[in-house]
Amino acid sequence: MRTSTPGAVDLSGRTALVTGAGSGMGHAIARTLAAAGAKVTAADLDEEAAHKVAEEIGGEAWVVDLSDVESLEELSLDCDILVNCAGIQRVHAIEEFPAAQWRFIHRLMLEAPFLLTRAALPHMTGQDWGRIINITSAHGHRASRYKSAYVAAKHGLEGLTKATALEAGGHRVTANSIAPGYVLTPLVQGQVADQAKERGISEDEVYDQVFLAKSAVPELPTPEDVAQLALFLCSDAAAAITGSSYSIDGGWLAE
Image (cartoon, rainbow, N blue to C red; front, side):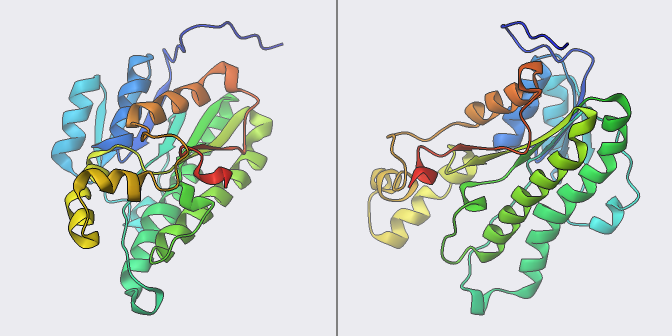
């Protein structure tokens, strides 16, 4: 029988692959898993960022364009932990949404996670242990105007998570998702001035009227908050948790 002991999560001897590790939530997750003892591969399109993070955490860099899905079709991964975090946002009305951008978002944020999961599962199931964590979004459960591609991709990633959980659970491989709302990342912080100008409000008002508009608590989560939840889902204490979606959204999904 498996037993768990309260305390720090020890991932010594485990290997992890984190996509989108060059900044924001991916960076925080890579750093947190490495601090717990895992050997982490930091995957990112930005070569400089990937190598910088790898050097920081004592891991390896994988410079990769995950939207080039054909290059991933024959991939084989020997990682114990897979975190799919890479993503982008594009905002257009449906009737004006460029088809090429729609397909790009779905390749990057849904097809690539599927291919990486497919590549990692043989190793995980072969050793009867694995953790797959997909960073989705509150938009994996709710929709917003002008974000149809992102919303559809995140809904799809939630579905992929559940299907993976059912197929892999018998081999003690878990698959879960983390669904943040707005997170205090450089990407979000970089939107403040533009949002203020577009809406004719002050930058301070952007936080209350935009980022915190659907939050029941008066603060945004940080990338480190997301990373700590990812760390827990990698722990032995989370061995029976699979097919679940954990929101970090200040109560947005409670409505």
